[in-house]
View 1 (cartoon, rainbow, N blue to C red):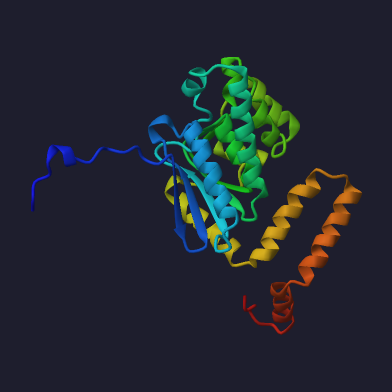
View 2: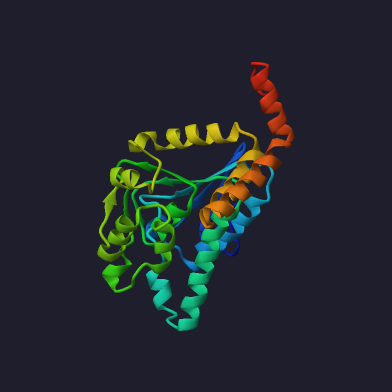
Length: 268
């Protein structure tokens, strides 16, 4: 084996801010700044935005798992990076980009599941709230703690108030205090809480149930679910009825109903 000359020595490269891995129909998206508790730097926001946009149009992707590398899920925005800019225009652009990312999660056809361990604070807690589903380790903790720094977590409040009761959400926002995983489940922020060693197995169990269902039904149902929440009840029922009618003529639905009537498993 020939020696490597000094001029040929490989230059260390920065690890990617977000890692995307496929496991059949399930896509795992991992925030990859473990030494910064996966804070949402500009690089992370950009990589997450482009990655999710690509997954959204991938017909082979049926479910998305959003996770964090290292000891935490996500500690929110990168405050050190934010302070290095400091102009009102920069902050407006940054929070607009973050809001666009949150809406991308809601608008993509695949269910997005937050896999939460360690801490999920500020915009990290917002990420959990914006995901369609969330599974947390028993030792996970949640907070919207910007108020402790004099910054009310206004953008996280949008997601939080749509998951928790108003008084519960407002209490978190004005106190900045942490809640544990059991409390997060009781208040509706997460779906399931398991011991840390069972976290991946529980997420896998949930995704396996989802991907066994017809993709068209899941996508139509997710879109309808969020649109009707923002409507009055009459308009919501009208939209829901139209969605169900269209769903009924889908080939997968016709097969599912036929299989039920014939007392056999559907062949999707």
